Length: 134
Image 1: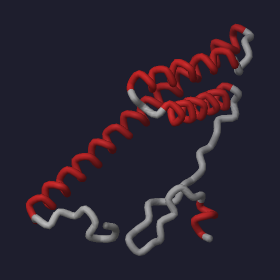
Image 2 (image 1 turned 120 degrees about the vertical axis):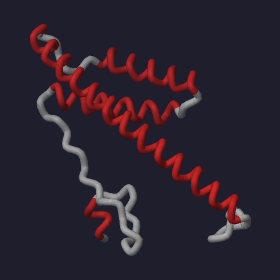
Image 3 (image 1 turned 90 degrees about the horizontal axis):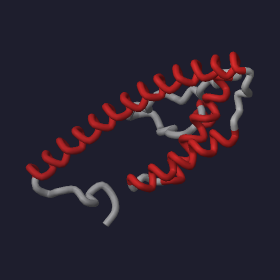
Image 4 (image 1 turned 90 degrees about the vertical axis):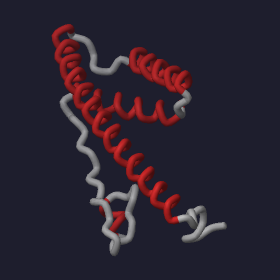
């Protein structure tokens, strides 16, 4: 069964409980997102320190062996925790690319994503601003 009635509880109490669970889960995701963002900021500070140390030691910014090891370690940890390895690899490689850019002094500027759509605005989730205007 698909559509607006698919999976909706007919019992008002069950619906109220489901709505409460949904809000609780969304609040928890917000908390986790906040922790993730703070962790990314902390990692950025370490990346800056490492960049300064590499410069003082005359080391290159890019260290392919170290980068590959970081990704392998993250993928193994993801596997141990039952987390999607491919997604983990993608995220870690993106973080490494950003770290490299920071250390090279060409810190990447994030794509400006459109604000969350209002109820009367069509969804542009995952699109750039230009794509969202089409």
